[in-house]
Image 1 (cartoon, helix red, strand yellow):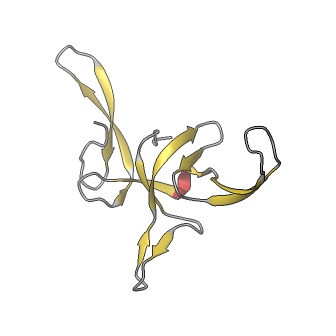
Image 2 (cartoon, helix red, strand yellow):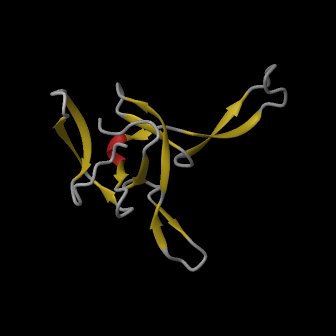
Length: 118
């Protein structure tokens, strides 16, 4: 999986793929990755895939009721945002050798070739 916590991603598939503004223009929904689940190949994206959960009253939540939380979505339904063009892009892993001879893996945008890692 080439997505890490803190990455900005665009939703490329599913019901939360597009958001419409007041004029009716569609654009891709984007968000920040809050958590990554590599065993199940899922990611938790802020503000995407909101589901309603029925919660029983407890000491932490005395009222209980219906709350809205984010649910994980499959990692194949998101694409990283290229920092130079702000468009969704595929990712390639490139190995670089520094001056001391150590190798380092860097994520690179396929279209522009700009590194995604800071």
